[in-house]
Image (cartoon, rainbow, N blue to C red):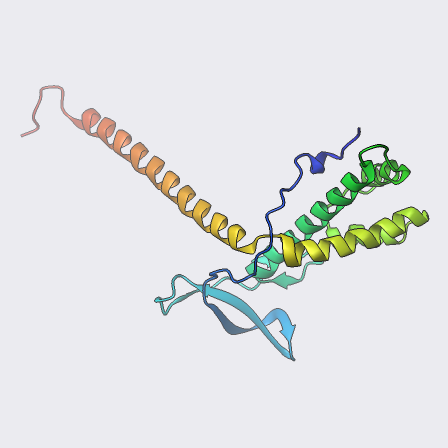
Length: 203
């Protein structure tokens, strides 16, 4: 059974969850190169904490999409999640094609298509699949689109995603800080000994 490289490791079903995650308070500030909402352009920045009056200002051109358009960090993360949802949905459909008794001929067609057109940008990849000459591939694209929608709305656990991202960031910060302090203490001790005169006290 041939399985595309990026499909190694099937995403786990995590159950239904709402998108009520505890994101930092968004702050809208005027900026010319932002996304357009109701005729206004702005970028979103987040405060360092809910009690901090000084927001963390992210430059409007810090992140861009595949077309070179400036996007906010939240939008950049949403684009990455969209690609993840497309990959997950495609993997679900491929698994359905294998079945318990026999493998659908469409499975090999999809594997060949993925080898020719790797899935990097979800929407662009689906557009190519929808334009495929083979009818089965076009129908599969429609199935993937619907599966992706359902997965994002009802199956992906947004609460866990937010909590894990926050906790891992905190843990990584702690580990990096700890390693830095340990290295500083060890280096400081060696420097102190090297500066000590051979005869003992410098007084």
